Amino acid sequence: MIDYNKLRQDIGRWGATLGFQQLGVTDCDLSAAEPRFAEWIARGWHGDMDYMARHGVKRSRPAELIPGTLRVISVRINYTPPQAEESWPVIRDGSRAFISRYATGRDYHKVLRARLQRLADQITAAVGNHHYRVFTDSAPVMEVALAEKAGLGWRGKHTLLLNREAGSAFFLGEIYTDLPLPPDAPQSEHCGSCTRCIDICPTQAIVAPYQLDARRCISYLTIELKGAIPEALRPLIGNRVYGCDDCQLVCPWNRFAQTSGEPDFAVRHGLDDVSLVELFAWDEATFESRMAGSAIHRIGFERWLRNIAVGLGNAPATPAVIAALRARADDASALVREHVAWALARHHAEPAAAAGRTAC
Image (cartoon, rainbow, N blue to C red; front, side, top):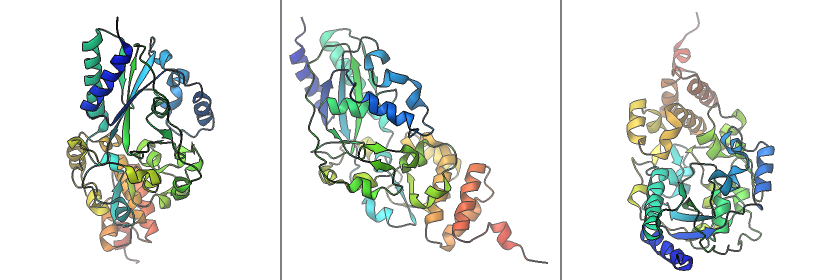
């Protein structure tokens, strides 16, 4: 006979030993979140992220995604890299590239998944075979809603999970299990009347409290969107070439965000403080070698150049910026060429070939 109360305590202790800052358990009832998600999809706010709608209600009904699921173990792990350059000075310097701080180290998917698997293995060693699946942003899982029900925090007005001791600077992961563990109680919300995240959003993607139009979100535009970035939004992106942290940076609760002790999340290749011109000079082999094992690698070299071209279009019009753009005016990618042409036009500059022509 399994003592599930004791097992729950053991799982919490094992999770802490594995480096999770918090662990909670919830049941599978997401009926309160399901209508909001369906409305979000109906409005088209998911943009080109077709996978958001592809699985229907399986996202909000864990037992339909993984039959037999009774509980979800939800965990969080801090990601703020130690000794990273302060974000605001980088964002305010148009010559530098800002990369969302969660992406300056190794790919969190691999780190978190391996850690969750080790936790699942410990559970198996204690109780024998049980039916489970490990998830790290890798399947139709409503991870914020589940973490909220599991007591890890509350949904902020920017739609991210907030925690009183850690702000929002953490990753989430889950284990779906058929073990009837005692569920934890959710926290109350503590946003109050604050609207700083809404007010700061560069593209006004947070259209109302708890409502995000992803089609305007810089994280969506620089990571998820595969095609051209809408011209009207390009000037608003500034120098944010991969993701956007503005709504988190102004959140009062992120005063309590803690740096990560995970070596894998430490900044790699100086990505916390690097010039746009330097990044734009990378060839594909450099991108592949330096971004291997990084979350950035998944967008590919073409979209990476697209994003940097937009950043250069918004940068101060120095000779180095113009030269960098002209060097890629004839890039093999039509997507890159389009964004380079836009950037040069922003600086009232022509491509090198055109600039060198003289009238007869």
